[in-house]
Image 1: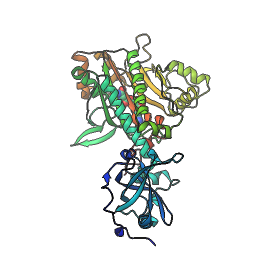
Image 2 (image 1 turned 60 degrees about the horizontal axis):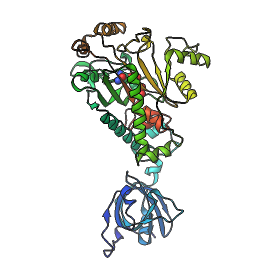
Image 3 (image 1 turned 180 degrees about the vertical axis):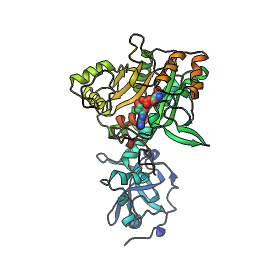
Image 4 (image 1 turned 120 degrees about the vertical axis):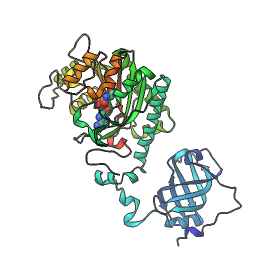
Length: 453
Ligand code: 4AD
């Protein structure tokens, strides 16, 4: 016979329960606590109920007996409750999150989630069509995998900021609404800005470059937008772009800096008490990258592709000047199996602002960082610092330089050698957390055909 929730009574002779978040409760052995959260798992036997409570900080195994067990017969998954009871250390040989169990003596119901057709499990069936699951993203995020990825994401961004801070690099927040392009006109999202044509930013790079004379080395962690028409597992329409711009350095120093950032940030994430174990769970075979990374010149990559019989987009043998598109790049990276700094791409397949190599003007001081299973996670380069040469770059790409006066002025009012890069947060996460697609690494992914919820 189920008991109505309201009929439960707290025994006032017990010690007063102290409110705790789950993660802190793991250390509150033998204390009487009050813990609020969502019913994550529920197993009801007649006079005994096992429940896993979730509050975003962790999971807690709870045991309900007596009247509490009876009242729990009406509980449903995802209902919110406050549980009162005593934290018990689990005996040797048994396992549960934090190595503890909550012995519940009283609980209150805060919000009852639906049962039947509307039940949580009906909404987020594991084998459902991915697009239906994306409609239920707000509910899917409650799952163990997605929430783990989001925690790793938070830890990664924190680690990247910590690295920049230690390197004395200043954070800035450039605008997202702009009137210039950085990475080609075809992927611009147009925006009606009080009647003027504007775009959502593709990259904060040009703005970061303008900060060098006033702030020195700078970085931004900002959304970038790309109207990518193709559906691939690594393209989003909106992604979180980690970008930095550094001055008075050489190409080689830029490469070393990128390496150091990746190695250090990953190290910080792995030693994070929350994120470290989550990576073990999501990506058990993950090996922390070590510097120096393999450096591979574009021309040697072309040779490698030829030797391994991998074909270009036209299904022909690769030749110098070809873009190494996603499929071929992935095959090469997965075969080589270690992080690669792919450097010195030809002028024609790279952006207008990239500096040419002094010893070979066919190629640029450019770099893509390639990681096994994902491919490119970072793109960067040294920038043209000569005004005339930059103007020639605009001309080559058919871009009117006039709206870029604030960017080209940097070459006029005290030019300086400088370079920078952008990292796709969702891409580095897909590698770190072993996700098939970057969509799993974004809170509410945007791609063509998807702008909700
Ligand atoms: O190589 P990209 O286009 O380089 C730039 O935007 C430079 N202006 C950055 C800079 O030097 N400050 O993009 C940089 C990175 C890529 O390596 C990739 O990781 C990510 O941004 N990226 C995307 N991630 C998800 N979805 C997309 N559509 C992406 N496009 C680029």
